[in-house]
Length: 349
Image 1 (cartoon, rainbow, N blue to C red):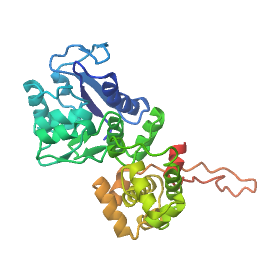
Image 2: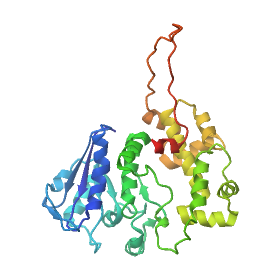
Image 3: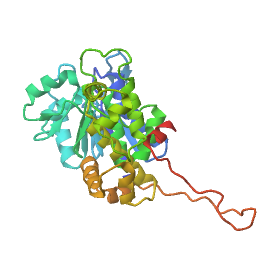
């Protein structure tokens, strides 16, 4: 999955941020030499656009630029949620039928739904537009808690900055976690955010400092994935009662402790499969799964593949240092490679 052509739809009223996100994330892939990914802006007429901020952007191609694209991105949508033009609708349906993936980021989920690509599927969009989306498309199952939903050929994401998460997910899916981590580090963003946009829906603001114990508990949990991490253990790490912890955890992360722990364990399993030669059974034990079968089930649910197949596709080749003569002349290596154990080690680099 090296070469990839990505066509990004540009329309009058687009914000600079929405247009920039896919170009920056996917452009960083090319800049780092991780793969040959190319992005192009397009619209129906191939004419320059005026952004919401008042800037003029030229160099926009017409619909033919999306022909044969591996991925077509609708980075947002018009404020009036208008129905997409017949020309755009026809192109998207044709491209999708011919194998192009389509991503509707933020309000871009609206045109993707309008042209029928989400029929019988789940979707997400900006939380402020969820009720309107449901009224217009009641048969589409909305998930109000996640940052993005990927069906393989169609992807939707939550509001604004969640587009970064969705684009990094695309990098991760096609090139592996290490590539996504490298891009994220360059952009100075988290390679993967847990929880969902439920964290950002308007609600009473917690008291200052109220989430610090939760953060301490999460830091502790990441370093103890191979141990039992039930609610009681996490609450003790946060020095909180069980009831207070559950309530504060939901407010802070937008998810449940069990879901958060499962996500961290699956993420660590993915990293170990890429970066080490540990057998799957050993990976399972190190990540705290009850059994290798449990790990395989959770891994398949998260990434739609088996741990063994994932390793085959994304295993990072181990670089063995050259043999150098030791002072005793035995010819043993001066050092052997070592790999960080926890996700936090990667994020710190």
